[in-house]
Length: 459
Ligand SMILES: *Cc1c(COP(=O)(O)O)cnc(C)c1O
Image (cartoon, rainbow, N blue to C red; front, side, top):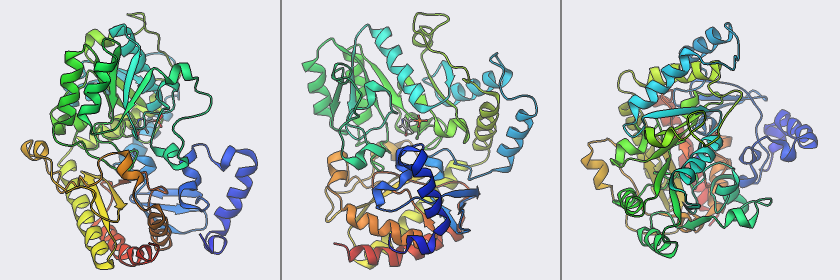
């Protein structure tokens, strides 16, 4: 961004220092702002819907630490729970009551989960889920969808979205072909492709892994019947269905996308919200599958800090808050207001935008035309959920890649200048939290009016 050094002198200097000793200046690639051709902001603190950089600028935050901060930053109840836990000691390497309590909450929320294991990151949860599926089915191949991100374990670093979509790389260096070959990649939302893959690799598919609402290539909802079709295929072919609900779990509904779309997974991966802003994640499923894990079964999985007492306290406090009142309706109405305002602002600016939204995650895709007619999902309406206005114009990774990234970059820069902190990538979602106020939404829409106009100039 031009004028970066003037607006953010301390961040610019901090990044120069960090780059000398951290690869790319960051500890997770997308934080480097590579997708928007600028340098990252260094954050000093955050509270509620706001983040503050080290230059003293305030922003309305739609990154939310990439998903966990559904209550907003530094929620008093979460901070209190963390404080109380810290004073009792930070790690024991032995069972605690809080772990059972967290597992009970997860099981109560997800009807497909009978037993849970707590881990420290989404990557770990997915890696273990895949190992478990292979052991359970005694098969090796995994089907994944292009543009879905499932963490950075070897088997799943194939055709991912998120940080790697940026670089246009299909996978990562250092992943042996012999491992990547075990992962069959097909387009998201393509039932025929899934059927074909099962036919072609008859009797060899251990599992299908999918983000039930894709959110690492921007937000891409499943077309009607998609998740149900995957369920049927897995049942017919004795494969397990793994839902990676690391983003969607406890965000779209307490029971995640499974509750929303009425399709059950065999194994569910959770993270982000389930860690309450600390490093905790989980995977769970049917008892007969989960009991294959050590120490009961032969599938090894372990972690020094798994079920860490501080992370577990933050998680329990977060899930307690989410269980109160009508959090999900509140999130829906804030998010619907934002979506409508952004759509109007784009229309007024004459810029072609498709907004995909499911509950409190959404994306503005800059598309020169509506790629496919927009429609709402019948299954969602039937379930009686307030998941309004789902644009299905962008339905898979190829659609996402055909959107105008130049316009997105300009939009991002203009919004940032106006105090709105969006994810620094055209391939990431906007996360709305319970801390976002009506005033935040109005300010965001106001900023978007001029920003969309500037973006339109980038055609
Ligand atoms: C973030 C994410 C992961 C990885 O979680 P980490 O905690 O970053 O390892 C896995 N799957 C999905 C869908 C995610 O969004």
